[in-house]
Image (tube, rainbow, N blue to C red; front, side):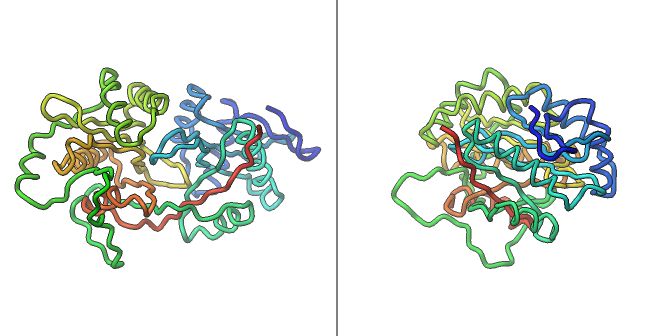
Length: 339
């Protein structure tokens, strides 16, 4: 892809040969080298080009900027596809010249041509430069809130802001992701819940549970995540919960080794589901507990997710296992989809 912007700058696809320049620019922005993360990130994107969009801004002297995004096919229960902007960087001597905006415009053009209706990203509330750039380029606060939990703090964190995330009683069937820590019967059931790594042969049962929860067929999304888990267990953490000889729940998370400007690794929980027939039996809690244990083994200190305030059952589960409001904010930018 080559799109002229200025006589001295072109926007093109990021290539393997750009790696060292990306590492250098990223280090100058963050104050430390993330060579291993950048190398892994580019390798994964080149291996799965259908799930990644990576653009470069270059002049006669070489790379001056880049933007990296990942396609969102069903994370967080989404219906419409989106692009999640994860890394943006511009060489220090070329900043404040509109290069970042041109990269974003090229990404938006790609999204419109591929019928992707929105761009999404996350930024820390105190990253003033990034927040100003997001506002100037048309992003707005997304309807999700970002929650996080320290891996060593699960089941221990207490709320201090007075926000009650518990789901109120209701007669209509809600998605119930797990039980509270309440009674002895629930604790007994949890001891019978076998949580293990997801396997290819689990796909049919996972799709059955997902259809029962969402009412949609998300086979392509689930298959992509399962394939990623099989190829690189250091990136994708996918778990199933079994009771009575059957799969009754699943969770999918991704090791975030530096996206959104992070300097320390974290995990992003993007899908969790429990068979409605096994609600109130601690399945959701068992899945999250094992997720924390797996993250600890991978030296990942925090788990993060983004949830709509309307998703009360999921919010209730996350609150009960120790998640709290993050100091990071979710943003969205609508895209005009071409017919």
